Image (cartoon, rainbow, N blue to C red; front, top):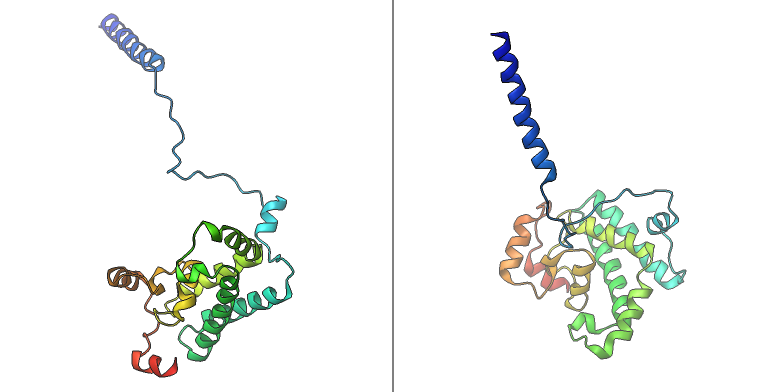
Length: 204
């Protein structure tokens, strides 16, 4: 009996070895990187580029710095009390001025009429408002718009398109379809009630 068990174990080991060797020798397709799949890498917090991108460094333009600080301060206050109308009005005014300065360089963005002839102006606007400080402004705007404090119609149409882009809030874009608007509102955070359209009409 011991001999049969030994032979059986030996045969099992041979079969297992055969299949393992076969699996190891199989040709496998080389996987190529897919640009649609995000890749991740370790972030070196000591890297000078990372420090710069995470900073509040600006282009040292005094006018733009004032606009940036106004948005940051107003956004921070509104995040603390999203339904306070005075704070909301202050944020809307600050974000409107910031977007207006952007559009003063490339006005075609506000009217959706940009063409090849506007490339130089678009590049200039991206450079003027592309500093790490401007990234902090966009992040602050995104937090406000994700809080449920802002609604479609809160911003004038001439800046609403750009504000929607900067804040990643397609729901306030005046060109958004009713279907998109309904989805945006359904996915949003209903912290505050939308203002009465009749009251909004009287204040604009």
